[in-house]
Image (cartoon, rainbow, N blue to C red; front, side, top):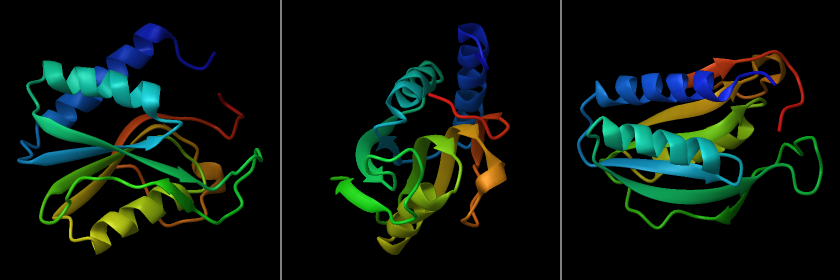
Length: 148
């Protein structure tokens, strides 16, 4: 086990405090599924406790298919329904590894006219980065290990 429940909760609360300090107006938070759903739920609860009012949406992307390694091609399996024009958007994902998935999502949301797009990830594994992207809000940085 890389991080225990208390460490995860503490870090999630710290991220929520950091996000709350920005005082975003009309914030849209987009969870990239399936991987981020537990982290996103925990973070949304922590944001609520911080008094952050937001709209939440989900996007399903895949670059893995049925494989354990990324194909390099990102596909939209489910798109968001919310309007992003002129809004601050935070994308939540579980693991930032190659960076292709979150870079794809960020580029897509920027192209749709979002006012600002930030990224938030639970784990950063920079060893295999293929896209020029970093997390704006980060849970933990970890070595290149297979994690579930």
